[in-house]
Image (cartoon, rainbow, N blue to C red; front, side, top):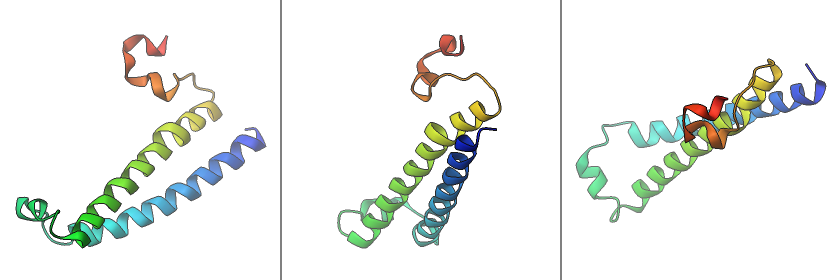
Amino acid sequence: MEPKILLRLQFLVRVMRKECKHLSTTDQRLFGSLFTLEKATRLEEDPDLAERVEAFVGRFGRLQDTVGDKLLPLLLTALGENHPPPSTILTGPNAWD
């Protein structure tokens, strides 16, 4: 494996681990008890709860972007696999051609 690719993979794994840790912390704070419809309707009146929901969504999205757009394509490249660009994966069955 090329040293440049290895270094980038190592960096992305470190980033992903940090993102997982932060997401887990937010998950525990948000879903420590059941997230009910009642809680969801209180979001406008409860800024702390709204911030926790926003933090969870943002952290989940960043983790998803890191894994799907950066880590997995680079890992596939490092393993010698052909893959479509992440932006074309959902465009249809011919994206792999």
